Length: 115
Picture (cartoon, rainbow, N blue to C red):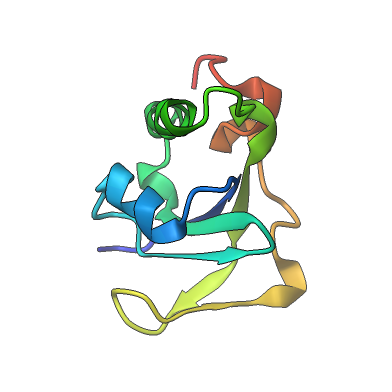
């Protein structure tokens, strides 16, 4: 897959990372882990869309109807270098998400604004 950038989709949820990955069943998601109650998913930026976010919202609402998906999902651009086509993603921490266009990524209150 030609890399056009990656994003870290961060989801505050009680759902286990492996369970969420299984429910999404999306082969473009490269990796996932949980840290302090937040599930992180590596998603190729070209495949992240309002439709992908809506599908994630729907799955989260299905397992927790009281979840606030607009507040509990955060998207950050990852300045990365791919060491191999799958997994093994290394971050360049110095400029992590400094210039992330949140509206383009469909985060926060901008969801559903025509992107």
